[in-house]
Length: 98
Image 1 (cartoon, rainbow, N blue to C red):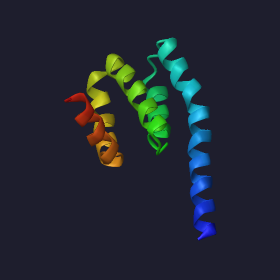
Image 2: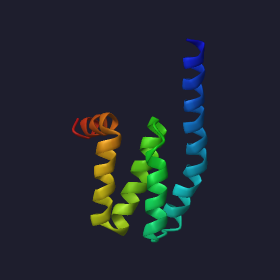
Image 3: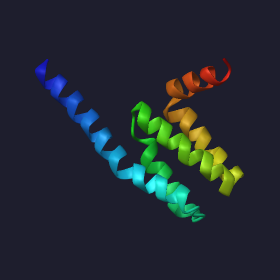
């Protein structure tokens, strides 16, 4: 049982480390109004796999920015979000409709 707890703690620590790495990248892209689609998409791919609420919110933040750069391509990432993070996506949509 202790091993499972350690694994879970390490996974959460890994997500927090990834968030701390990718947060400044997202901020730079948005603040400098970077339009490089490859850079935006590769960052979205990385952030999508931070399975925490903070990671979800960071992904949404960059996705909203991407929609200003290329609305049509941002829809593909919205579909990925629905597929990979369905529960969080559904909860987010529910909050919007309140």
